[in-house]
Image 1 (tube, protein in one colour):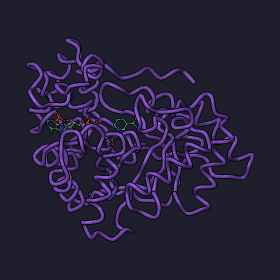
Image 2 (image 1 turned 180 degrees about the vertical axis):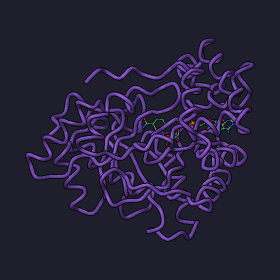
Image 3 (image 1 turned 60 degrees about the horizontal axis):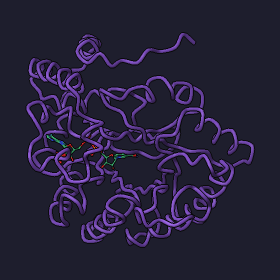
Image 4 (image 1 turned 120 degrees about the vertical axis):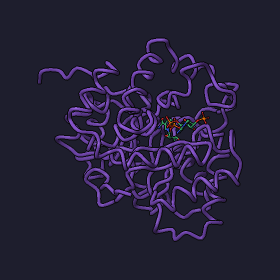
Length: 329
Ligand SMILES: NC(=O)c1ccc[n+]([C@@H]2O[C@H](COP(=O)([O-])OP(=O)(O)OC[C@H]3O[C@@H](n4cnc5c(N)ncnc54)[C@H](OP(=O)(O)O)[C@@H]3O)[C@@H](O)[C@H]2O)c1
């Protein structure tokens, strides 16, 4: 395993990490989730990602039970939660969502209870909240740090301008700005990581814990000939994701990527994950898996990484046609 410093912090994260969205408490039970976390941990993964909204709090409860049973030293792993969406779905009342001091504080307390932990290593604002002043968010996150309830605070799917504003306000107040961001990043979603955050990486420094490195499985090629039973895009309640993820154009590109992966002696899943971590601004790529064979395949990204020469990267760009244009600064 390779470990990378999270932006300009002293924290080291394994370059591959493991998350529970969709899977824990929805597709897989305690036993299967525990086996996956153990396989991850035994292979050097030290970061486990979660959020209040995943399976409406059940995912944090499950991960908490697994961590408690594992016997792993608390200092050997990093665990996160994210607040914004609340966990009650359509029953959320005012103040049970968003980034107000009230919701951020209560969401942190609830996550700690569900995890059965004393502190969260990483705590993310799961989305920007345009109705809460950024100063309130910055002050609240710094209070939670000072109380020892969280160690680092960050954002998820904020724009570069929103992140820059948070840093400006934090600096004015003599407080800590966001240390990390959690954006989607994969061979179909490149704009934020490669264009929008360019000046933040360059001028401020920021760790990233990127999500959906396989675009929910699309980049494995598993959807090339239809939707396999039991796969994520076949799940009830996920037609929104299916509509967003599948198109003939994307499937044609994935087929092309599969051929290139074959030439390199690997699979498109492994190649796609290696491609993500080839970007030095990626601190860690959060993997998702429902089965141990998937996780084993995805961990091989570390072996494929050295094969990604500049020439191979150019060929990937040609096959995918998704490289965003950099403005002429
Ligand atoms: N901050 C945010 O807004 C946000 C949003 C989404 C996710 N996340 C985080 O990022 C983590 C990873 O995201 P993700 O789960 O979407 O990642 P992903 O890697 O894009 O998709 C993972 C899914 O693809 C399938 N899969 C994975 N490896 C495979 C393989 N080798 N062969 C065939 N199928 C394979 C599995 O689904 P099936 O077996 O069910 O098909 C698996 O659950 C999440 O758990 C969460 O922690 C954060």
